[in-house]
View (tube, rainbow, N blue to C red):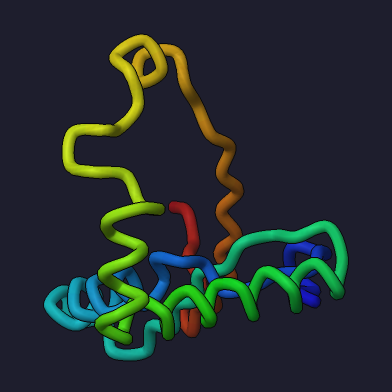
Length: 110
């Protein structure tokens, strides 16, 4: 449960790739105290557990050569089998971003 978004959350599938990029970008900008977490909202605690276990199971199956071969040949889309142009132009997704920060300096107006 995440108290900031007031919802149950699970790891986001791309978080392990996105988080290092965000941390590196902040370091290059001289911001050394940045923390970053990317999650996906779920309807309930139980659905979060199920989805997380499924995500990790899929990851393990991709690391094993026999199951990776099966998945790439019979389950996963082939290169070029993405969404249609119409789906790309009319599709959408919703995203909610929460940021929490603190400042040691106070701003004043003159």
